[in-house]
Image (tube, rainbow, N blue to C red; front, side, top):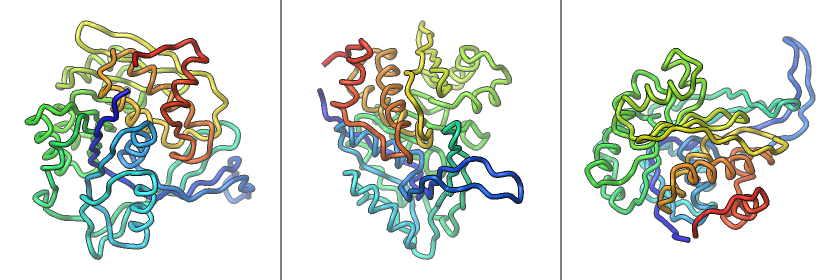
Length: 304
């Protein structure tokens, strides 16, 4: 199987995660498990791609504070190249406190936004994109994401987009090839709970393929002359943090293998499902061998 180069542009952060039952307002709940780990849409997607065997390169901006240092060390420990990140003196990096419900494994995120992170898009090393076989993109920095997306389109590099479909993201959405969004974002955007219809509306903005992830309810997709649904794999979830980010990274890896779209989605769904068996957005991300073994156990065979 090929070992592609996946370049990502977007956010990486630090997550402080704890597992606990829900507390009543003003009450108390015991913390059952706790972990500090790197997170972020594109950061975690690249970690997934790296564990699967890709060469992963991170682009974006980050503060030169202690949290920024921990974020970078976490990425580098996973084999992600961080040498092209924009490091901004005086800026504070993003971190999140994540409550994982002990009963449902669903997570609630409390985030502290970056500060003093403004900089020119001219600082983005666009030449790195020429190395990419696939670009993973999130529009956390919309102006930078648009510059990067247009460069990727100019070079013919396919773009896998992770977006909440905010109004400020729409120019980036129109430049993407594979727009992958959560069900909640799709419903809010399209004004319908029909995921196929929502995907069709999303695709009308410009992407050749629209994918809507619905967690344990599976994945819907619409592309050229094809639409469909892939059910989720059934596993006992411990923590859903980062599942969508992992899905994006695995999706990009599979696109680089030039597989059929349905095969790509099945593969990405498997990687994301396995991730949910451990606490944290990254701890449970499987290797390629582990994923293929899991798929074989579920009677799914993919091209070599």
